[in-house]
Amino acid sequence: MPYSIFLPDETATLQLGQRCASLFHAPTVIYLQGDLGAGKTTFVRGFLRGLGYLGNVKSPTYAVVESYQLPEKNIHHFDLYRFSYPEEWEDAGLDELFQENSICLIEWANQGGDYVPKANWIIDFQHQKEGRCCQILPQHSTQQQELTLWQK
Ligand code: ADP
Ligand code: MG
Image (tube, rainbow, N blue to C red; front, side):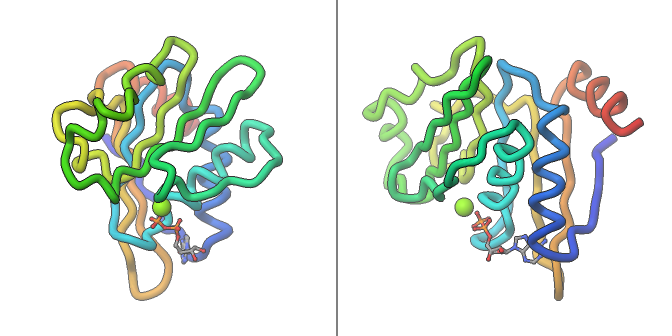
């Protein structure tokens, strides 16, 4: 069962990200899905805030990945939108970032084809007339159990 929520404005997206700080545990891989401007990067900004990171959170559109070293884990935020071909994943050596203590959040994962590690979670954002609809989709039974506990 996915978790569905309507996000009326940017603040709601930030708050959901913040709440997810207690949902995602390293190592984990999260795909962020949705059109341009759907709120994927905003969600990551809230997530990092929820983990106590107070600095600037840039969109990784140009850099491909932005990394944040926190006391017990590393957060890697990818955006593969500008990939011309999936092999760029290998050229950039991105596999190295998938460690026991990493949480990897990936925008436009499909652009990396089969090189991209499989998702433990998918978070889907859909534009509405105003605001966004969001679904958190656990990909395995472990994540489903974590989601059920988190919702209580
Ligand atoms: P993406 O990374 O999916 O391309 P961004 O996170 O950069 O999208 O967000 C694009 C714009 O959408 C930003 O201006 C942000 O403030 C706005 N936004 C984020 N969440 C919402 C929401 N729930 N309702 C309305 N606007 C939102
Ligand atoms: Mg983005």
